[in-house]
Image (tube, rainbow, N blue to C red):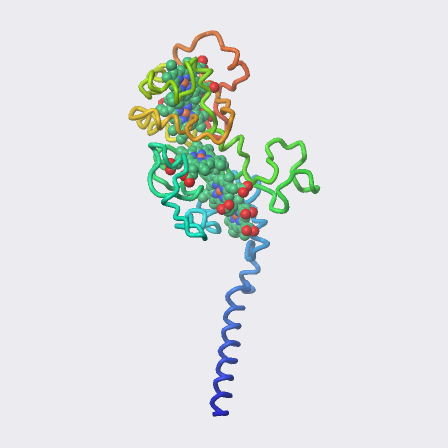
Length: 276
Ligand code: HEC
Ligand code: HEC
Ligand code: HEC
Ligand code: HEC
Ligand code: HEC
């Protein structure tokens, strides 16, 4: 009895030692790995890819090499208290363009069918680099300056130059519509193209949108257009859209448009199709 207990104890001990050895070998970088940049957590956090200028030209595959979970993680099927996600419908899940079950923020912009149909977003459309030390400006010599208006306190991306583009209010006042779209859409057969077949026709010439697919979707229903122009609004303001000249554009500029850019943001603009 005594001997077998001792034997068992030794077996456990040996097992544990071997196990720990394997564990150490698996987590600590090997000497060769240590030579390479980004071999450990600290180095990965300060990967050049998290900062300008490298982040500006990074492609998604480079980011996904470390951040695969961004596309793989799914929301819980039910809350810890047992409330099932499928039984709760958020307002944005009731839009006619919404399909499938509750999904993650990143997947709704990068991998859902509707996202892929109308958009072509890349990691660095939103992620322009952030300070991993403390997401606040002016706290150290290396942090962004207090005067840096591109910086949003405690946020990793700047919502005004990203989210607001597609999640602002519909500026119906600028369109001389009789009221908000939800009240006036019946009068226009829920069809933005009634007017927009001839007004502000130079649109969506940016590398993060599929301009042709958007026009196709808009022919079937105004809901596809309204989704990005008020239907999924997280903001009380509208995005100040650039105002591209279009054929038959009135010579006089309305007051609200006087400060507007005439071109899309340079970092996204593409030449109108057909022109070289
Ligand atoms: C070499 C691996 C590696 C690469 C490549 C990489 N990251 Fe990271 N990233 C990390 C690590 C590690 C962290 C710190 C995670 C933590 O502390 O939770 C991090 C943090 C982040 C964070 C902040 C997360 C948080 O919760 O604070 C964002 C956003 C991010 N990375 C985006 C990107 C983007 C976009 C790219 C591509 C341009 C990229 N990363 C490339 C490893 C990497
Ligand atoms: C539509 C804009 C957008 C796109 C596109 C986008 N992200 Fe994000 N990402 C965000 C926002 C917003 C957050 C939350 C930031 C915060 O907490 O301040 C975030 C958070 C993260 C984080 C932190 C962990 C987490 O889940 O919150 C990582 C890592 C990350 N993104 C990586 C990526 C990678 C890799 C890609 C490309 C495959 C990508 N993102 C594409 C907007 C975007
Ligand atoms: C280029 C347009 C575009 C930009 C920029 C954009 N979104 Fe979206 N967003 C969409 C579209 C389109 C959908 C609907 C996708 C679908 O139905 O699958 C959506 C859906 C969402 C949803 C619903 C998610 C869900 O679970 O269904 C949230 C939340 C959201 N966006 C937040 C944001 C935030 C925050 C930002 C900025 C970091 C942002 N979006 C930037 C177009 C955009
Ligand atoms: C009754 C005609 C009419 C209808 C219907 C209409 N619009 Fe407009 N829209 C206009 C006019 C007119 C302008 C302003 C033209 C200018 O720049 O002088 C405009 C401007 C816009 C702008 C730019 C606003 C800005 O501030 O620069 C967007 C975006 C837009 N419309 C989207 C839509 C969407 C989406 C729908 C359908 C949900 C829609 N419109 C329905 C007539 C209309
Ligand atoms: C996936 C989101 C999305 C969808 C769907 C969408 N838009 Fe847009 N729209 C945008 C964004 C973002 C801009 C600003 C692009 C830029 O900066 O040039 C824009 C700009 C515009 C403008 C301003 C044009 C100008 O002068 O530059 C008009 C008008 C417009 N959209 C109408 C429509 C109509 C009509 C539809 C449906 C056929 C539609 N949008 C569908 C995101 C969307």
